[in-house]
Length: 164
Picture: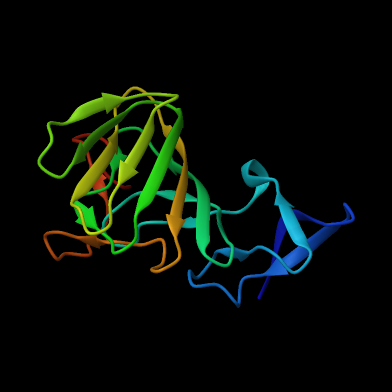
């Protein structure tokens, strides 16, 4: 499968890249001449299947994966874990964030979040605005985690913000 991703090769020419060699279905593989990516112009993928509303482009290197992820206002991720550590840098909007047994906090643009491997956490966009964040995870596991409650019924939705 070839995806138009607006990536540039080392000599500056545009190139379509295949997603077939990725750990995450729908992600794009970096390297082999493809080093520059226009994230805001790329197609996205579900980045939290079964437990989150996270959606956006994901790029995989050899050891790291990154994404520019959006959560629509009033939606987000149920409490979940994953075996890889994760960093999120909030670019737009405000997230309600809970990590481990710490109290929930409101976090806005310019905030860097760290989620250790196998630690329960959740992030939900407030009802005011969509949230956009840049995420980085090691590739010891894919982009997806697993809901703590064992369900795979979708993301978290505030009342009035349910999926249509």
